[in-house]
Length: 65
Image (cartoon, rainbow, N blue to C red; front, side):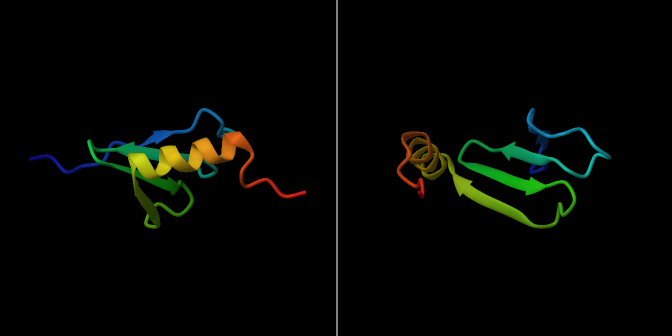
């Protein structure tokens, strides 16, 4: 079984020297995020948890005034 992650750069990355990007890799059950300038450090989460966070952000639930 191939456990190699296939990283994709965010379309919002500024395209600088190649080390200013947020990258994402997905498996059927997890999402992996990293910054290209520190690829050894990764954040791993489940798809449901990330979807919950995104919904909260979009709704303004975490907004500060």
